[in-house]
Length: 239
Image (cartoon, rainbow, N blue to C red; front, side, top):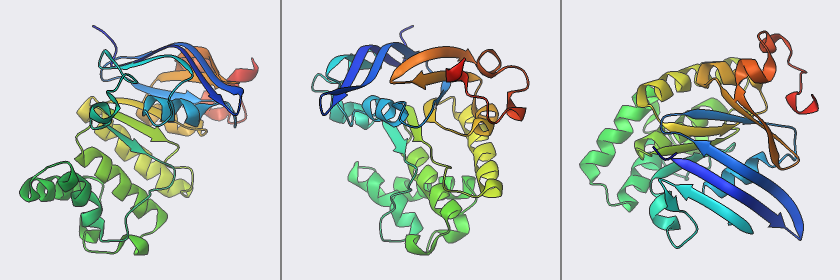
């Protein structure tokens, strides 16, 4: 079977400078891949390119075995969801933050409400549906963002360090819940993180990005070693 996400000879240039150079990257259906690396390694650039938000200077991105930058961007974007570090919520209620994007995609009001209720409850914020998004805590806002993403019923989920701004207890709880959902949904996912403790609840597959290139790819044990959670200062791109 062809991978759901595939990049080949991918190069992204900004201001005349080569930012990203990925020879090969493949993510199979249902696979969850963590992308780690130092600041400035190109992690967010890679994610934005896979999300079709930034076209490459050369090379190809194929999603569902379709050339993604050959006039197919809009149709393919409708098959994915992207969660940023900032929740980027609309200035309306929590529930309308979920139902409005669905309605814009042609989903009926009844179905939009059903999906909204399902995912708000799944992420533990069903009681907040009528609250203004501006009144949410950081954790509540990110739960809303995740509920909105899953309500889209995407075939690809892209996560750009969505837990960075959260305190440790909130982050751990939300990561554990997300890990359970990803296992249930068998959803193809790429997530960028700088916190290694987020990896075990979500996946065993890791790609290390350094200076715009994938320098290592394998299981978390292969990349970090058996006791990597005890080595929070360990940087695999330095070995």
